[in-house]
Length: 316
Image 1 (cartoon, rainbow, N blue to C red):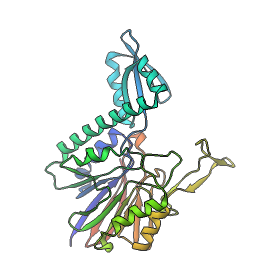
Image 2: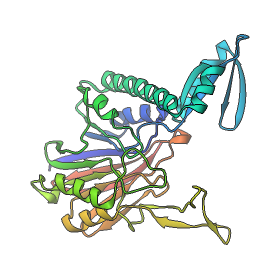
Image 3: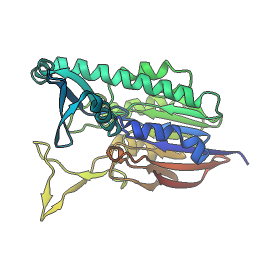
Image 4: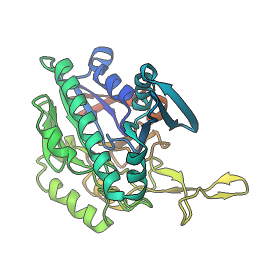
């Protein structure tokens, strides 16, 4: 029997702890294939401000810090651990960040690029020579320039927008784009455009019976897409003291799964909707995310002779 073990995780949002754990999964889970879904990059820059007297000031997770030179590196490690970007600057630099969106975007992009290049280097060092395939792609929150960085690696494969052959047997399509969100992120589009993006790849698939749909957006109304509704000011909505939940997944993804019935769907995007769902013959999985706690949530999928033999959710 031909066996393939996949490990899939997603939505680490810049967490260095989660990324390093991901690189260790071949050792712990004996995976043949590693797949890291979208939203690789972090959400926030944390200024660490030099005060001119040999000390530094920062605000992080609701707490104000005044640090000596020797204490700054420890705070920077803690900031990286939860996925944010530490940024040493002075008071004038902070003022520029606050008043100039272009300056903030430039600094954010530079920090994203620096971290991702370092991650790629670590991955190449640890995984080169191992008998493991590594697929890493972006998500709706990730700036498009990360694709070029990923594709510059000789160990990592970025499958975005392509049909790739996984472990010599299973075709996989990958789509970072999602249906619209309240945040107007870098890679979101209308359901109609998302449908076109999916169908362009699907048209190149030779055997749908063994195909994997690696789409960042989960299918709508699948149970893998439930999150709290927000109002126009992006504040959580409650009713009777309870959060109001709704299905935030993609209609285009659901229709593609229903029509084409691939073997497996790997999804993310909605961190709190960890779970499994069957849509016809297709097993759809969302491992969820707790990146801010440094917990890598994932799922092991064992494939045998073109069938899903088992799946197991993991956390560590």
